[in-house]
Image (tube, helix red, strand yellow):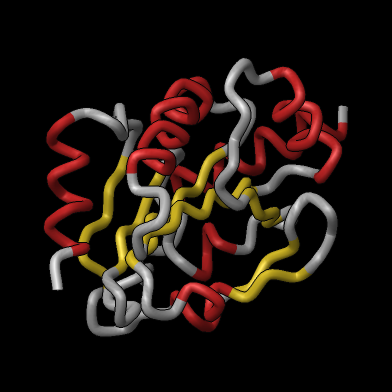
Length: 166
């Protein structure tokens, strides 16, 4: 019953979230911190100087689950470059995320962080899942991407390459 109520609350939050989210002139990237699945706090300021694809997702969201393997392939394609993918599970427990990761056919090597209380819906204006934000090396928002993508397709690869160019 508790999980059903949480799911309903999250669905409600996704639909009715405030619209004061992330803007290009008001980057909040380096102010954010979340625990990882080992419960260690991770500050996104650790990624200063890197292009960051910040993805919000949930295990109960089929499009989110579908895009995870392509995100891993994108992560591998840009390995060793100044690029990082950070995926934040919105409103789910550590146990739910760990279970999902164990069942997924593709091992995810990029950071998975937890927003167990779903605070990002209000704080960042997340309007639906999946939702991604692409930040340049200076923490400036370059693009907001609503909905799922095949992240290793040519269009998405070219987008990342264009932001990586000095």
